[in-house]
Length: 385
Image 1 (cartoon, one colour):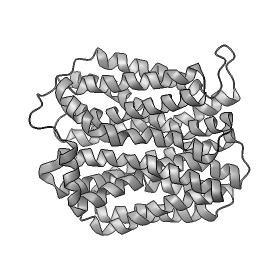
Image 2 (cartoon, one colour):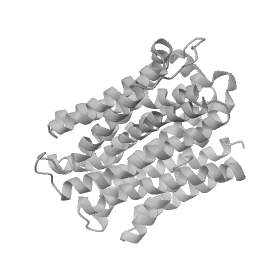
Image 3 (cartoon, helix red, strand yellow):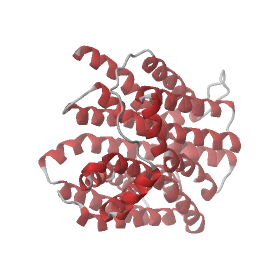
Image 4 (cartoon, one colour):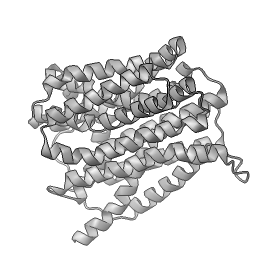
């Protein structure tokens, strides 16, 4: 039975890889900006669209899981994701990319909400945490591969497909189909869902508790900084160092490399030191990063800043999320729904960053992210452990 459970995890890990497809939005929006000659404020609509759907779909997805089951919900998320990856293969016009990024966000909202519970249907007990951590590592691989694949497509055009950087969508489309097929043929027994599903009313009522409200804003800031760095890092190098987009695309991969390292090492550090201490270290790294991004003008300084924010921001979600859950142990479903809705921060931050960068250059975008870091500094006193 154990060996069967291990085999069942293979398609699930493919799903975690597919979950990482959402992070292609950063580098893709830069290429779309260049192809369509868009302003920063207009180009930043694309990452904002992706994360807008978390506000709408997180709690309804929990209700849907109760009706059709976790596996079918994940399959639905994969189908939506695969469609979103197929559309850019038809062209990169503004309407097509708007629809593609919207569907990518909807699929990812469904997947983020349903995939973790599916893992608990396969792996029980103390192994859940380590399995989810490994899943995040797999997800991160897709995240930092995206800029490399886009660069490869942009510099080595494939004539037979008439494609450039959009070969990224083709490759992830094929992997998405594989993940869908593997999960579809994998038999997974799910425990029967009992009890009342969380509703919007249940969730918003919990915002009356200060720790839940503050944690919700903490998640918004974490995701805003994550998406903001993903989008802005290449622009900083283009503006300050004079790199081309293909050269600067490495900055996005650098961010995800250090975020991946942070996920792997963070699970160790959180076992050997207090959560509050590690949270302070993480936020201080992000604060130093913002200062370097704001005034840095050399490649070495900007790369250092991107690495620092990548590592510093890598474990913020899990630490804030756990503080919220521990604060209301009898309402964890509702709290979880709220925290997932907090991913809506990925919509708010890029919009403001786009407007300010149009007005004052990329320093304006960094200033918006710095506001998020300042908020996380104020959140330190909420971390109890």
